[in-house]
Length: 394
Image (cartoon, rainbow, N blue to C red; front, top):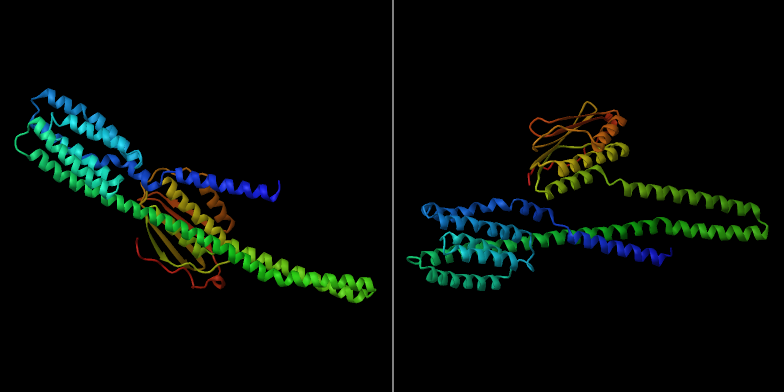
């Protein structure tokens, strides 16, 4: 396959990845969908009137049956987008209108509809909708024949208040979406800058050396043609030295790119936890250490964080680092509800890496999960430039 074909294939792959990301429900949105039932406690205002007319079994029975289409439309609205939100909202308003002749608690249904209207649509559309709903409440009051005007007056008040909460939540959601977009743009810009830095470094490292290699090779070729083999051999020897030096510099540069540093790794892992709404606190400090230990330790800590995000339900995490008697001890604990640990490839991999470094790995499941890594480090390797403790809990 030629270069154009590879480029086209890569671009298609990127497009498919972007489409997949756009079709994926954001974890925050998914969490809200799972906890949608919590807000149904507001239905208490629907059940209160039913208690006072419990002797009228027909009205109570019909009112309870109308909860079925309401609950269906409620959870449907939570899963809908603004483009399709009109359908569950319409069903919700229809159910509320049908319930009005049987119970004044139908006001509660109207308030839920007002919230989703405020959440899905613009402020102008929401305000006009609230006015229309208010007018409809007055019409229902006239048609049903409620005594006094408490039904439309209380209904209007609740619709406007709950609708405003919907508008506020809409603006908060938009702000969070903009933050996520900004973060993605910053990450993309950082990636582009890193690529430019790598290209610049390689140019600076290899540009002069490759020019010297080309020049030495041309000189050696001309010297061989003229029969000056001794001087040609000298230039070939210099050419070999330049090539070896270039290879060494490239290896060193690639090694630096691969090893980002344990402090950076820890910072990125902490940010990942906080993005999942997990409070993180860092206690103690990390010493400088050989690249082998630092890289292996970075992989271990990454696996622990992955397990916490994937399998746990923690809301708080604590990193503790301590270096005493030529021994580095790391404790990673959280407050997740514990269950029996069955070691999979992740924990087995951590144990194997620790054993490779002549260390120890243990864990406890009392009052949350606690993982302990202990590694030997000689005194000459310890240098407390270290990780600055972040004692602020976000």
